[in-house]
Every structure is written in structure tokens, then in C-alpha cells.
Length: 181
Image (tube, rainbow, N blue to C red):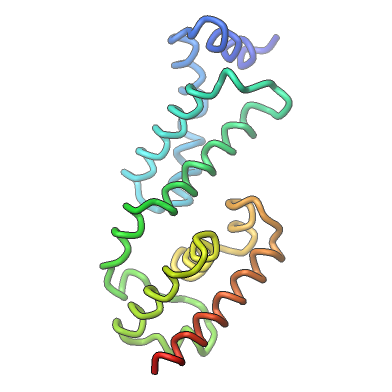
């Protein structure tokens, strides 16, 4: 039995703190790097990494070994990050960000027309009324400059589905903003 399996078994059967510390230590940097890549904020990534390991410890009794432990841990990490993007804290934090910090980088004529802060704020207000997953896809693509491939891995959907939702949302956003004018 390899060391990782032994540590997991010790945690599951005996709630062994030393084994838990050792297992967390072996994955901490990797999970922090993943969280930081998704969030681009060091302190927030540290907080989310802590939440990942808290969730891991709370649910390790359900780990059955069908998937690798690393895969299972990444699923937990993905869930914690999605939870953050859905959170009230994230929405409140991003309501007041100046346009300079939330530059819309999509090279289409539509996003190029969002030159003023008021136009951008209107767009963000309309975007916040969309389905949460769609809002997250658009924010990750435009504001986070993420690729469709990265987004599809993050939310566990086909890349073509992510593209469809993104372009449908951009069209809907464009229509709703035209109606306001």
C-alpha cells in the first residue's frame, strides 16, 4: 500500500491528525497554485485553499478510491471556487470596481463600445441578472481573460457548450443594452 493510501486510511479510520497534516502538506502548494490561478488574489487563494482542505477533511470518509485522490481533491477545489464566484461577497466586491480594473478585453466591436464607466456598469448590472453559471462564464472570459478550454475544465462542461452559452449571453447582453438606449 502506498503512503498516500495509508494516510487516507488512517484519517478515515482513526481521524489521525498527524496523517491529515502530512496529506495536506503534500498537496498544499498544488492546491494553492490552482486556487491562485483561478482567483488572481494571493490572500483569497490562501483562504480558498484552507476551505478546500477543510472540505476534504469533512468528507474524506466518503472517498472510496474509485478516482485518484488528486482528482477527488481537484473536484473539491473546483467546487469551492465556484461557490466563491456565486457568493454574495464576490458580487458585492465586484459591484464597485472601477472600469480600469475590469477592462473588457473581448476584441469584438460590441465590447469595444463599452468605453465609459457608466456603459460598463450598465453591462455588469444586466449581466448580474443572467443565470449564475452564464454570468460566471462571461466574467471569466471577459474579465479574467480565460480561454474557453480553461473555463470548460473549471465548470466541468464541454468547451462547445461553454462557447454557446458565452456567445448567447453576449448577444442577449447586446440586445438588452440596446433596449435601454
